[in-house]
Image (cartoon, rainbow, N blue to C red; front, side, top):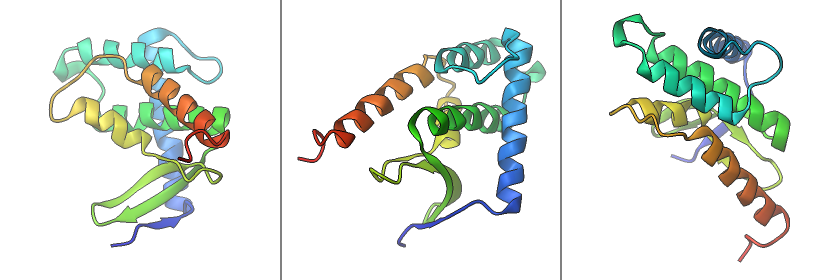
Length: 147
């Protein structure tokens, strides 16, 4: 199946807003952060603190994936000019960020899920992913990654 890319409809916009709110709530609860967009480093700290909480008293994994993934996506949108889109393929439909100039695609919510399931991985990943995306975009935008 050829992937189908489309803009967010009203429901998807509402889901993004809900995810951003959950992410902000988690950042406030675990770090006290409440002003401005969180950095990749802060997202790593919050994820690690969430993972260290007892399973029965922490925010549900789905809310964490949606919340921190949405906040990370917004960071990429603001810093690098990505746009939110829905991508549908043989595996399902999910939100993604696309750089229209390079064709680069990032699945931020899925990236968080991969740190939660099948086994919780608390190693920092937001900062390394952010830096990797920055390097990739720089190479592609300057023509170094076109070989």
